Amino acid sequence: MSKSVLAIRSVKARGVVVPLKRPVKNAFGVIDSGPLVLIDVETDQGVTGRAYIFAYAKVTLKPLVHLVEEIGRELTGRPVAPYDLMAAMDAKFRLLGWQGLVGMAVSGLDMAYWDALGQLAGKPVVELLGGSPKPVQAYDSYGVVDPVADERALRHSLEQGFRGIKIKGGDGDAANDERVVKGVRTLLGPDVALMIDFNQSLDPAEATRRIARLAPYDLHWIEEPVPQENLLGHARVRETSPTPIQAGENWWFPRGFAEAIATGASDFIMPDLMKCGGMTGWLQVAAQAEAANIPMSSHLFAEASAHMLAVTPTAHWLEFLDFASAILAKPAEIVDGKVTARGPGLGLEWNEAAVAKYLILY
Image 1: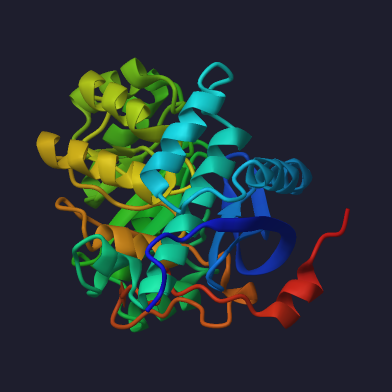
Image 2: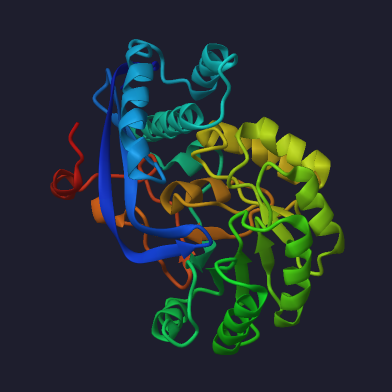
C-alpha cells in the first residue's frame, strides 16, 4: 500500500517547438508551429505528474521554462495538495499579480499535480473529481479558411464525426468575412454548428456591424469580438447581437470570470486551463457557470479538458486544436466527433524520441 502523502521531489521543465499539421491563421498572423513547455513534477513515490502549456511564441519559451523550474525549487518536499499549493502561490504572487507568464506557470504546475495524484491512485483525474470518463462533444478548430481551397479538410472533419466547426475572421473586411462564412455554411449544411472567432480584433461598433451582417448564416457563437479586457465592450456587443457571444480563454483565474459574469460580458464562457488556474481554478469557474446557468466550453488542451468537462455541470463544447500530438506517446483520439478522458492521471505520456527531436536547448 502506498503512503498516504505524496510529496514533490523535483520539478523539471523543457521547451519544445513542434510542427503543426494545420497552421492556424488569425487576424494578427499565422501560428505555424507549437511552442510548448513540458512540465514534469517528480515525487517521492516514483510517479511523475505531467502537463504541458502553450507558450504562444518561441520568445516566451525560455522565461517560462526558467520560471516553472524556479518555482519548483521552492516546492521541494511539499505535499502534492493542489488546493494548498494554489493558496501558497496566491500568497507568493499576490503583489506581483496573476496574469501573464506567472499565471501560466502556476496553472501548468497545478495540472501536473492532479496528474500525479491520478497516477498514484491508478485512476483518471475525472474519477478523482467524482465523475467518470465519458465522450465529450468536440468541435474542430480552424484558423482562417477558404471554402474552396480548404474544402477537403473541412469535409474530413465531418467524416470524423465533428458536429461543430470553428473558423477565424477579422483578417479582412466585413465582405470577406461574409464570403467565407457563407461558403463554409453551404459546405457544412444546416445541421453542423459553425462558430467564428475574431480573436479580439474589432472595436464594439465594428463588431456589432459584422455580427448583424453574418446573422443570416446561423452562427452558433461569435468569439472574442473585442479585446478580452474590454468587458463593458463585450456586454454592449452582446446587448444587440442576434448570435450568442463566447469569450473567456483570456480571462485569468476564477476572479476574472466572476467579474466577466457580473458584467454580462458573454452568453457562453470557455476557460483555458493554462490561464484559469489549472484543474483547481477550473472547478471554481465551473461552479460560477452553474450558478449563472452559463454553458461552458474549453480552450486548447483537449486531453486534460476532457476530464474537466466531464465534471462540469454546464458542459458545452470541447475545442479540438491539436498542438501536442507530435510529442505525445498516445495523442488524443477523436471518435465520432468526441473525446474521452484517459488515465491514469491525465493520460499524458511523452514520446521522448520526439521530445529530443524538437527540444530547444538554452
